[in-house]
Image (cartoon, rainbow, N blue to C red; front, side, top):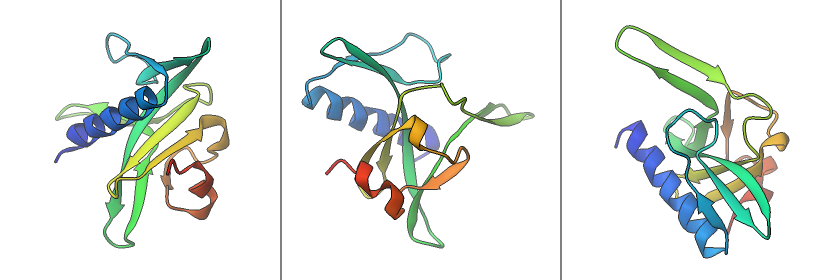
Length: 125
């Protein structure tokens, strides 16, 4: 599976999670926002960014990149998300685990090992 396909699976898992838990899910048109979709419950709206965390083979840990990437055959870029880019980071792992982290609680802005003990409280069991 390529990166886009993994991302699509993660978004599907996130939407499924929120719908099952009584949220309305709104998808923006286009791909120009820092968030993937909006959730709403009881009048409160939050912006959700979704990432897939693959297993890093050398350390057998799920890691997730926290960058905006893009480009073409001759140009590639990676930028960090701004502090106010979205409200929550939903991470779906290759081990079929789900995490929901408040973005303001994530201090690293490059890459994280989601299975780290400091993120354990955000695991959606």
